[in-house]
Length: 203
Image (cartoon, rainbow, N blue to C red; front, side, top):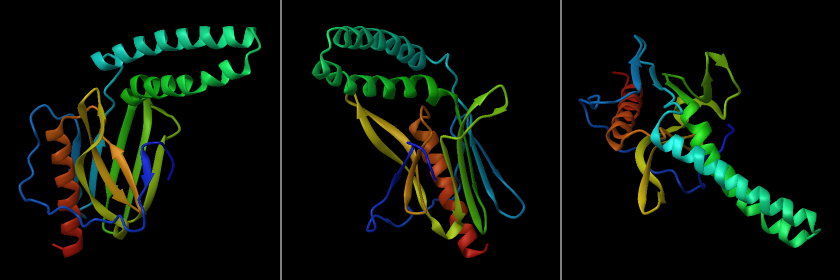
């Protein structure tokens, strides 16, 4: 697996799957699609949010202003031959890159998750005009590797919790569903856990 949306879990970090509650219902306003095949394979698609969302537009404008300021500082430092000042700007370039990724790349990402009787797969990739672009996250394995999913707070930004769908599989945690509501993330987690329970029990 590859991609910044995934992180390794420690050897002792394998919590049991949250109990699935029957009758999962699609919350109003949800954009994700959930399908079940005749063989009980679960397929979840989270479409890209697009760049016209308010947070994406604000983040894009902020990134332009940020890189302009940091670029001017770095250029000035290089012109004066100050290695220390140039090195000092590196963390600011990295911080700006993280903001740009969240503002420009994340809204373009499409997530496809499949969980079947024997195998699971996950692909997160930009969706631009139907072209097959390189994935930022690509992983697959035996379904027995999937511990479960939950809606969880993965960060605090400006005092506000950031919710994600956290899928634990193959000893890694994949943070999915940027921009989705907590209710939709909880619904998707229930769908994953119920599918795993059904596959395990052979119902």
